[in-house]
View 1 (spheres, rainbow, N blue to C red):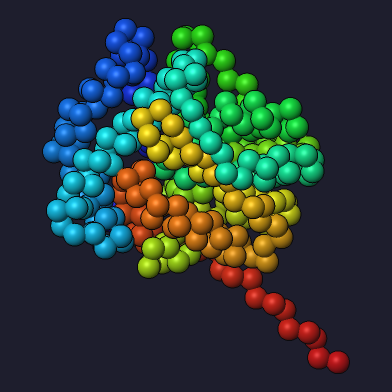
View 2 (cartoon, rainbow, N blue to C red):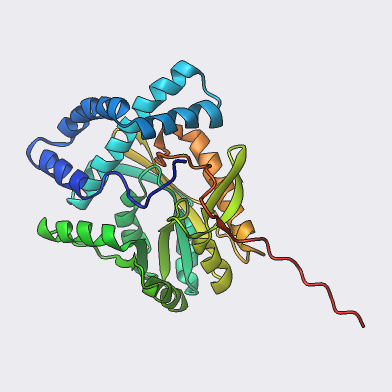
Length: 309
C-alpha cells in the first residue's frame, strides 16, 4: 500500500542542480532541461507515475489518454515549481509577477496579534509566497515556518553556502517534540505559523475527511493545534498560471471550529476546490486515499449529556 514515507522529492540535490543551471545557463535553459527530465520520470518512476494516473482517472474522472498526458504535465509542472523556488531563494524574485486574492485575510490575523496559522498543501508553489509574506505581513507579526528537521538542516546549510538569508524563523519537526512547545509559544506571542496540512508520517494521529469523493486521512496535528489554542487559520495557495506569473489565494479566517474534524474538513473542502481548478499542480505522488497501517484516528468529540437531576 503506497503512502508517504517522510521524504520529499526535489530536496537538496534538486537545489544544487538547478542553482548550477540558473547560474550558468538561465531560467529558460532550466525549463528546457525539464522536457527531458519529465519524460525520464514518466518512464522510470513507476510508483509516482501510477499514482498520478490514478488521481486523474479515478478522482478527476478524466479519460485514459488525457490521464496519460497528465502524467507528463504534472512532472513538468513540479519541475517548474522546483526551479522557480530555487530562483527565488537565489534572489531572482524580479523574474516573477503575482496577484493575491485574500491578502487582507492574512493582514487581519497578523494585526489582531492573537496568533494564527497559515496552512498549505504540497501543490502549487507555497515557497514562492515566502518573500511576499515577509514584505507585506512581516512588520505586523513574526512568521514561523514549520518543516521536517532533517530537510531543514540540509537545505539551510546549502543556502548558507550560496549566501541566501532567510528572515522567517524555522521550527524543525524532530523526534523530541520540542517543536510542539515552540509552536505553542509562537502562537501565545501573537506570531504566525506556516505549515502543510496534507501529509503525515507513519504512526501519526490522523483525522478522516471527505475529499474528492472518498474518505482520506489528514494529519491531526495542525488541526488539534488550532482547536486547542483557539486561534484563527487561513488556507494559503500559490499556483503558477503563466511562465512567470503566480496567483496567490488566502481563504477568510476560520475561527472557533467545534472539533478537530470540522477544522480538517474545511481544509479538505477548500483544497478540493482549488485542485479541480489547478489539477496539474497536485504533488502528492502516492496513494493519498490509502488507509494508514494501524491508524490512530482522532474521533469526533461527542457532546456530554447533562447529568440527571
